[in-house]
Image (cartoon, rainbow, N blue to C red; front, side):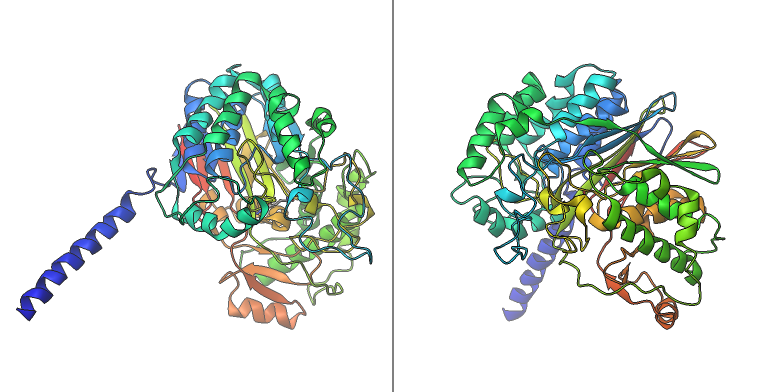
Length: 565
Ligand code: DON
């Protein structure tokens, strides 16, 4: 009797195990692909649903801009940790003739903001005020940005077609990936704290699990309104009125005037010649293009040997220290402060900056404690269409789920105000310090590190690349590009290889767990470098143009997904 019981238990248990295995295999509905080779182009984004929506638009005859708009709205639904309508970002675009454009749809400081709004009576930074809650919110730029891109460069010329898939995705829901379910559950208490009494999919009755449908009815209505009435509804019409009334009732300082006066701007691209290549990236209010230029200029005469070579690591780290020191001092919104861009990106300037560096030892920077890196989330996508147009777009709420404030309309609001220097020298979420140039001023855009990048080789499109990662964005783009351009890696190896980072302050070389060998760590330590391991750096999405076609690669560090056509 006892034996029979044991035997049937075994059968039940093994059936359960089998089911458990196969259940794991069938969800999520889309099989995630990290590397795809294609003939015509494709889409790489942080979420399979968004990638699929972008590819459908390309297949319907949309160009890279059409696909980018559809992907941006899709990410606001299926990747709410960073995808957004309540945030902002930057887009680099290369058209079929090879002309380059940079679109700035970064958030702005509210008109009622003040330089010391995050300081207490003693002049100390009030913890959390610039990162969570209504005061952390900058004027959202994403919807205006998408409309601006659409009005100039859409091929389909049909806004509704670009919005419809996102409306459906929000209305019908999509299955959560394991990472998403976990991450949402982790943040429920913060959502409750910022939105007491609110009924919302972000505040579920019981914890989410992998495969659960995430349905956002209110967001679907918002997107439906943007679809039929355009950005006007979001900045001037009924969506704006409901949003502002609610934010003010909750103690926020955003106003209708902020919404009316918000504009997305085309900026002058930063272009950096480097050997056979030209690297095109984002100008201020992003620091990305300038700092990237400085990094490439600093290493141009170096003979790279291998990713594990100590001198290669040293010269990259020393370039990073110097460029980030300049970032902290000189950079802010160029509509408000004068930045010596031409000098900073000149070859001569960086040559001079590197003069005091020698391979015999680390150049010291005085130490400083850096801020705690909470959940850092932004998102990047790369698209190429069949006529060779390319979009490299990075967009964000800043921290994961931004300010955790859920707007009337069912979307999350950014906490981008933390990218200003709350106080000179005080480290922000990413440990970055800033000065006068990046102080808070009404209507000013906060300094960013987002670095959507397009690289040409001998005048032809070569690489479309970008990543999230706060302060580490620029160094990750630099490193992955060096991997391809100097170490001749294919894109898969270039993106999946481990990363390291230095940002001047704190005085530490950060490296992904397991990235540096014991020998390398010992060598660096002997030369006076402090090294520190950390979790993943960035989530990069790239497209490399090869002789055979396109190599599309999605970062292994998340649910990122590549599709070609
Ligand atoms: O604009 C910036 O530099 C930051 N708000 C980006 C934040 C970010 O990348 C978070 N992601 N991991």
